[in-house]
Image (cartoon, rainbow over all chains, first blue to last red; front, side, top):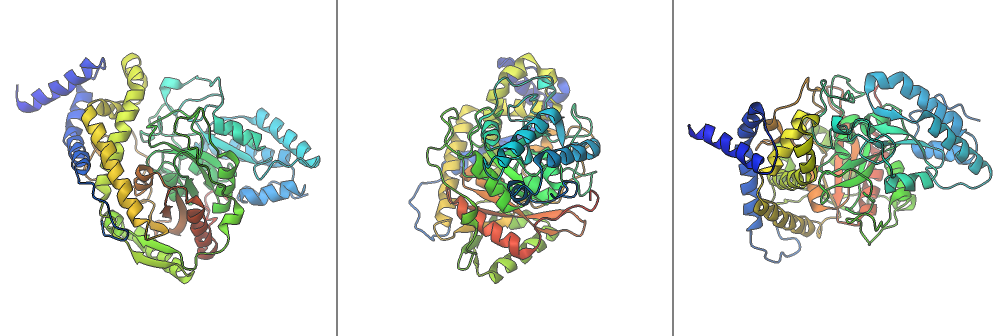
Length: 61
Length: 470
């Protein structure tokens, strides 16, 4: 099993744990979109970690 | 008495004034609206359900009340409609899953509109559960853009945009989680207003993502949208997101002009992803705003469109997937392909990512608030592309979940929570409408509406209509 097949199996397994089925072609689509989903997750996590310093009015953000 | 047959493109307030003066019959106006729906809906697909008999009964009652001097307000006797996410009679959310479902209780804002005397003519098309794009192969036929019926009207409040743009209602209520009121308003050449979060009750509205969901009107003019908002706004203890801080906004708040108004333009946020034709209309709008006396200046936001949409979508997918989990388990085949896949993607997001997205959202609110400390209003195009052709079938998930998302500049106001209005600002060379979006600080709805109204009055793009549906 190569790593792509492995990741598809992992995605299907995570849905199955929640009691949700996914057909083979649905898993293919989820796997195709997954890198972008991970990119979104990273964006959210990076923004969340930005220091919360009080901003002055008019300061460029 | 004025004939109702040629009033289908009149503004809500125009017909309201004539109804109040008894120059126009609500029954005749409703009959004319129903006749136009019967004639055009088969080709435009705006309505899923039409309540002809009930609407005529409401019109008769309104007419009698007005005759007795018991005028209830600007909606009294005027035909309007609701997106099929509001509980009212047959309520499907555009999903095969709910085909045949009839709501037992009415949504709070429907009841408020009814109490204001509105004549409710029907339920309007929507993207499935206010998310998946409508396609030509859907269970429900897709609504079509009156400017080019081969194209989408924008969504998810598709039917609301079409009904107002094609003269099939004098106003419509939609919902807006990432832009679903303002996007169809922009693509259909009408006004769309997303109020500050929590000002219109969502009790009885089928949710997508409760922390981002808003209710809001689509209308032919900013004044009409303001009147519709005023008729239904107000705290509702049955809606957990309802704000206890309420604002009184009415037609008096629209006057006074915009001389000296500070308008910031966050080009770093929208410009890199905007098509040239839309940018051209937007730049012309900025010139008009300056000519009206506004002080228009660059206002860097420090956020990219991708950052805002990524955070907005992580929140939306997580909240929507949690709500839909029972349906995914028990009726997976009755959800549309695109929507079902998006919900499965939402289930793959870990809790820690949702928590991070909420923190990221707080940072974004802080950035926008900082900017709005120096500006009264932020201006940008509503959306950076023209209306797409209607897809033949479900779009691949990677069309939605992508690092190059469709440039919907509407998401910023949902993530922030403040008011935003889309108002027509031009026609692209393809003959399709372009929208100007103005957004402001939470609860400063009056400022945003006044700016939009002043622009609309002076710029001349208001009340545009497609020649395909005279």
